[in-house]
Image 1 (cartoon, rainbow, N blue to C red):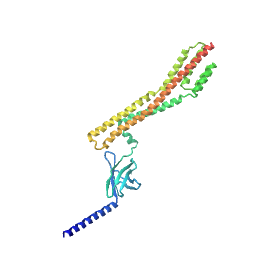
Image 2: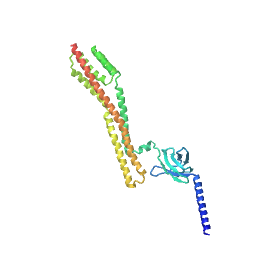
Image 3: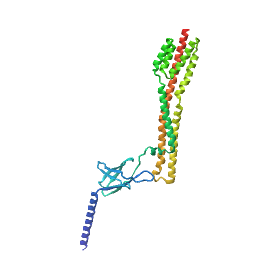
Image 4: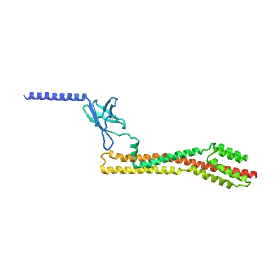
Length: 334
């Protein structure tokens, strides 16, 4: 009797094991389920409907789903394996490459978040009050960069410098001062205007039939330089100021953004990183904006300053050479 009972128990155990195995095989045959909810990254964490969810296997097999009005998605019957989840929706930044490992009969919950793409208004709203001084700096820098470029292009001589100097020297060797003056008028530019002033002073002395000293010619040249050089240097201090002030406004935005972030930490704690996103975003954006304005402004300031210095050196060297030639020519004539 005891032996018969033992046999019945053994048969029952074998039957239960077989049933469990068949049940597991049936469950495994249907694969696993991947589901979740997609929310936006605002403080309200609103659900996003109509999101295209793509569950792509490492080998290339793809399964798709779409979120409902509650932002929820679900895809069943996914074979076991490793997958990457990507989500797409117009007006939102895509999320790609979220890994998930699917097992047979498993229920895998994968929540995701999407950030709405910024338009011009929402993007600049992130800057806070620092946006206005940064905008003023950028407009000022752009205005004066264009104005200085126009000025320097307009001040270029219509004759090459070497050709111009050779033409002036040839006229002086022929003692034809008015021809040299005409060459200056034809060439234009700061150098020609300065030399023209010295030549006219020399010509006036010849008309008055009086001797003229080297100092008198140099004085006429210096007076003309006082009119030409400030025109070239005009508005450069404004560009230099903008190049210095813009990063400071960016730093101010950084400080106020970090104050906002730490205030949020003090009130809400660090449990939800989204609460910190606004302040940190403002801090980073304002710093980047300040540098974006300052860097090109500083580059153009240095470029314009080098052009002014080059004009000054050129005026000094050429005018000295011409004055010496005038004085030597007058001494020879005497």
